Amino acid sequence: MTLQIEIVPILSDNYVYLVRDQASGRVACIDPGEAAPVLAAAEEKGWEIDTILITHHHGDHVGGVATIKAAKGATVIGPGGDSQPIPGLDQSVADGDVVDFGDERLAVIGVYGHTAGHITFHARHEGALFAGDALFSIGCGRLFEGTAADMWPGLRRLRDLPDETRVYCGHEYTASNVAFALSIDGQNAELQRYAGLVAMLRSEGVPTVPANLGLEKKINPFLRAEDPDFAQIHGFKDRDAVDFFAFIRAGKDAF
Ligand SMILES: [Zn+2]
Image (cartoon, rainbow, N blue to C red; front, top):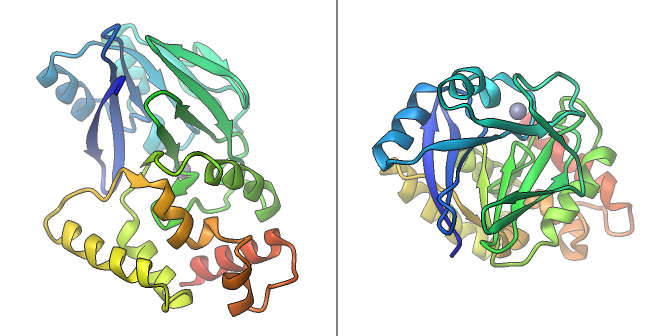
């Protein structure tokens, strides 16, 4: 493994990730919605944050940027093309860019719809995806600034990453996502098994992240809009995948 990854829970259900490249000792934090817990976690490990990576403009993902940047002199890298400016942005990146981070290379993958310019970071060597609010375990982000047609192509690209990819999501939403998924996919034995695991982890306060992408491909309804058997259950067998994705997203919004 090339990266050490620490989960820092903040606010009510956000996760910030502290990421250290073992070869170079460089340290990034991803989506620091608050500064104090992130700085404390880094200090405890003896890690010096030099980079701040941002997926989208929402306050619970950028609220700590100014303080961390001022304290550490860190470089802020994020989507210059989002609908609102990223505070303190030093380096604007967009879909298709690659961010060098020590021995690791972070591929920027745009997934639009939650916000207009939302990006994710794929650490290729490590096999880790920092998904922000685009993809959650058993869920995906709400469509605040786009349509199902905007979001589906991006989600599809995340779905097509290797099965062994570990997905680091922006929120701990897994338990409520599982409840919704069971309501539309109740016969899915792997989903039922995962529901039991999630209930056990959450009863002990343990994060359900990172999620395994290979499993998500089988049980996350939002990644299965092209699955003919799943589509057939809901009457979308010969319809466009975007329509089925929109149907699932609307169902979750109303759940
Ligand atoms: Zn958000």
